[in-house]
Length: 506
Image (cartoon, rainbow, N blue to C red; front, side, top):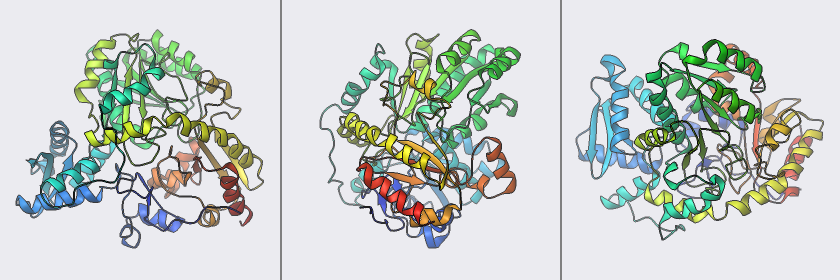
């Protein structure tokens, strides 16, 4: 038997007003969430903050709209004046529809308002989602209190001293030899990725290098950045097979003088594949191409990427913000990289630092990262072995699967430093297993809490739902019904027991 119980639809995971996940306990709930079904969305108390505007931010936007005469307009609150300016420019690029967009600034908050328009609202939301531009939920909470529209916040542990220095104290050993100025904290992992992308693009474009290579299938917002912000459609290049460095070499021989950078996850999300990182780095160096590596799936505490990368980008929401209630990210610029100083200046010019309370919350949690990862990584091999041997499971993927095990171990900090991600597919239908499974179910990963989700439904519902989209996924080796499990700190027998119970009931 298992000690887990089903968590009701919409319940924050964890039970915090700033939780980064929420319970989607059935496939019907997952579909309703993606299709914006009021029967589902009305029960969500929160959601992943880059995808669901936080209730505090919605409340603040409503209050400010009323106080400042914005009836008939939609107000988007941004993380800073600079972000609001970038959003305004992005909306005005939409042509005549965006001409009515206007900057907003009041009560210490910056944003953009525009006439009510589904088209502009979608454009604004996607932009802020893709690059991590939303106002922090904690800042929204504080602003509500300051203007008398909400209670004073409290009830959570934060670090009382210099929070940035406390975070860096734990990050420095992971980036030996990197000066503090080259370790730049961001308000989210996606903002870190966007800042690195912008810095490299700005440095390489004057040299005639405007193309970018996406190595393998990456996280959806990383793909969106590469597709949206490259100079032309021809400048987005997708190299599907992360293991095919010979093919990448041929691409570089043909187009290398035009390529600005390569974006790679190590391992990839969700197939958990690791290329030969040293060979990839040598190939990039030989052609003057900047290499950005992202170890978010396992964390920078488990994978040492900096010796091979020009820049490392990673989400500190995962594993470091292990309580599951704070967004943060990091860009680390390798001081040995060509033009490292210019890259550092480029990143610092556009990165959005964490809000002070978010940074203080992260600083209170980062000291536990080692212990949390140790517990997760002790259990992960046991769960992976159980799933790989179960007759109802068709495929499993994790950091030490045979196809890329040796590649991963070359960057792993220890033999057992695997992170907690296991993705798997079933030999039968998804829905009955998922609905009966008594594990926490929702977006995100890298928390103390075990968390599972039908990843392709949450990340790429537009592809899952059409024959053409499913064909695209299959062409990339992605089963639309793939499940992504991230092991937490609970006892291994409880996690395996929950999985066995649901698998046995199919």
